[in-house]
Image (cartoon, rainbow, N blue to C red):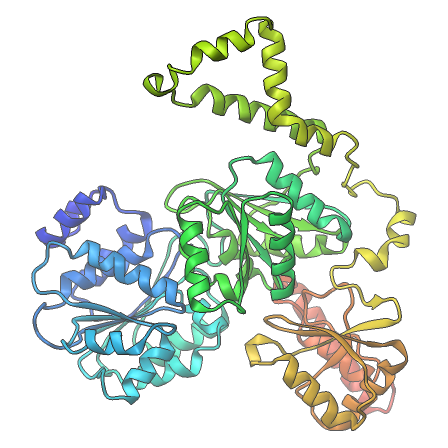
Length: 595
């Protein structure tokens, strides 16, 4: 199919033709005719990141709005500043040959006065982040009473970032007869709830399977000891000399440490995390987009909404808490028909997490051994020779110097010149990898695994004289280290509790306490009456809602069963589980204790 067959206006067709667009992607081929049809039906469109969703909703909306009406007819909500700017830029390109069309992007992190001036002329289309839009609504600078088309782009990301209340507030200020279009890469329960609550007779269009990984991405994992993850990361970078990718870490501190170590070791890297100012963030992203940086080390929060083309690799230095986050990470490569590689560096206790991700994305991971020294040296050498063969020679500039160079090399043979040239450029790799150890642990014996169990755990439950605990609260519930410390002070009434490292993830909060204080913390939670908080030791099943709660084993066991990962269920097992639960309940009623 061609774009010319999709009933778009001539001005739009000419603009996208100048951009080199000829054939629509599958999501565009399905969505554009649907939006342009006479059906006043809402839409839930599911497709992987990088499949052309912006054009899928942008082109038909440009076709439907009436330029110059001095009414805001379309609103596009996006989770992040970067994505907001990118959507606005794309819509501007598509509408370049349209007369009197006014598109404005409003987002946080930018001087609001400039955006207020842009809004002096009522835009036909507003692209916005939720927080800044609400600010402008409160100022009376934006009104949504004439909105006909509302798009929630990267809706699952917006929910992960805690924008549900903001979205509901914005929706409440738009007309009831608007057409709502929800675009998402995954379909979590919260998305389904929004569709049910705020959309009318919505139709779902899915390209590929729900929550499936991108088609053109190869998924690879390397299995190593926890203390060898950074060495493995360097070998991955060295075996891929042209790597251009994002390295995902779990915490800000780890992001800084990994980036600093890479820079110190001579790699072209930088970091992106929440401690950066907006100006610093913009500078890092400008260098990365211009490929002045090969490796960007980032947290999930910092990298949300980034849209960078031609990434070759996504490297999971840490696996995320949930498969939806992994889907978003891997979807940043392999975009618009191009291929990409998603790599996970795991330890032995994370093999189960790999299997859960495989099941969710309907793709298999390929195990690869960590490259050894000779393999890396050969790869780097051939890469250097290829670059030398392909370099362009400016005879007019270099010709003046060549006679003197020939004189200097006249006494040397061809073989000696080549060997010295290679040594000059290559001695660093040869020296570094001459005695490189084998980092693989796939064939390690059970005795060795047990000996290194404490060190190899992703979030090892013990650190010397400390124990790592976890709470069932994280970023999703706006939990923070400050809130954790306040909670502990509140329920223990004991300022002697020695809290060590604190790590807040999307679903959980991990923290260290002294071993002799663990029972005191558990007892305090058990007696606090705060039933929404579940405290447990951070065991090896960190990716599931499983809590080994020694202060309330009965509740703990029930919690594990009631929150068992849905991906592990099948109808027959579910029936058996429910039958066992009924049987336990009956025994309890008879006074028989089974816990």
